Amino acid sequence: MSTTPRPQLVVMKFGGTSVEDAAAIRRTAAIVRDRREKCLEAIVVVSAMAKVTDTLLAAAAAAGLGDKSGALALSARLRSRHLETASELVKAPALSTLLSSVQHDFDALDDLLRGIAAVGELTPRTTDLVVSFGERLSSQIVAAAFDAAGMRGKHLDARLCIVTDDQYGKAIPQEGLIEARMQQHALPLIEQGFTPVMGGFIASTESGITTTLGRGGSDFSAALVGGALHAGAIEIWTDVNGIMTTDPRICPDALRVKTISFEEAAELAYFGAKVLHPATILPAVQKNIPVWVLNSRNPANEGTRISAVAPPCRSPFKSIAVKKKLTIVDIVASRMLMSHGYLKAVFDIFDRHRVAIDMVSTSEVSISVTVDTSDRLPLVAEDLKKIADVSYESNKALICLVGEDIRGHAGIAGKVFTAVGHVNVRMISQGASEINMSFMIEEEDAAEAIRSLHRTFFADPDGNIFDLDARANTTGAPPVSVPASIAVH
Image (cartoon, rainbow, N blue to C red; front, side):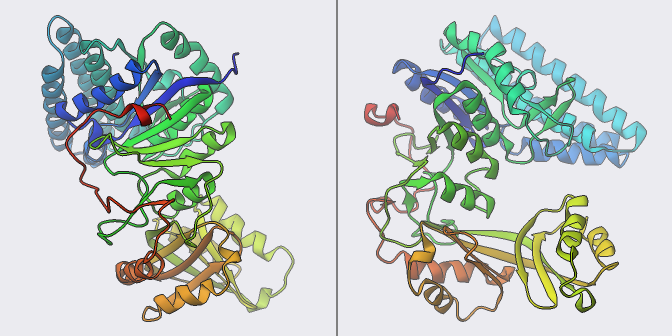
């Protein structure tokens, strides 16, 4: 197996809005063509067309409730959309082959939905199979569009290469197997001058059963592909100009972050920054592959570069993220105070129910943890009540401020909590990480808290780190060619 770095290989991931219709796919093709014309090898990973995954989930849910006609009606709408997009992008005689393949996949989807409706049960394994059709279809259409545009597009079923365990809905990648499969199936295509196009998010077990990496998993797919092929760069193409200082919908004066470290980006992604999937960073860190977050609607913009080490920043924070729909679980057990193994017993219960913990706070007689609001919480609480008194509060939001060496800035905590002094803070976490300060508040207070923090900490931003010239240009600009100065990262 070759482990030689390929500095000229770029993995390009395009999100749902970048492949949502024929016009978007043409923009995507122009971006990939630019890379090819600059003598770069490219492998492309695409999401399902925008909103398709949600529609597939709705169809699966309808079928699970026995509503066969409702499920098939949703599938029929998707069939028309995909056939129409394919017909706009590809001409005869290649169009006939593409349309036949699309029809075949929708026939298989309809058969699957009928089977679910007949049984009246929807399992996680079956759900993965239903939602996999989004990426399977988009990747075929994009590959055919590339080929029609003279770019030698070649569809590669991601399930041949991305191998996982069988935790349906959020499967765990098997990186050794992925590297071997990518070397076997993708590398020969690249070396023959093709542009392979794979669906993100979807995978399979070693025995070939379809799985998925969890919502937003196409970014993760791209990073796994980049790591397996030792790529020179991973590009995440979305519909914003990069990582921002906060959500521009909350703060219209949010700034683009020009450069950020792997650690900072991972914290932001985990704690709610939607532009990047939390798992994306790890494969890139392991192989020290720079990641770029770029805008397919404004490809001339330089985006955000994520690398092992970012330049020093005058500002204490790079960005503010928010994670909503959280629940605080309070566990009080004075009778177990200082009892050996008590904490382990508590965390074992969360682990057994596969409920991830975001933040932990302890006192002499209690533990408070924050988790994603989940239908598993009543089961967790039931088990916890065997060893403690339990209560929980929903509709909470976690505010996360990320930056380098936060602990090294004297008085920073006082400045943060002065800025949000008018908001009731429920939990605080600072000290476990040098790059993250977090606190929990009511969900309804989140927007006001973020605006107040942004005014306080980004009043005098560092021009070396933040783009001061183009504030919050999230809607994009008319497509233009990528300048040669930034084409090769």
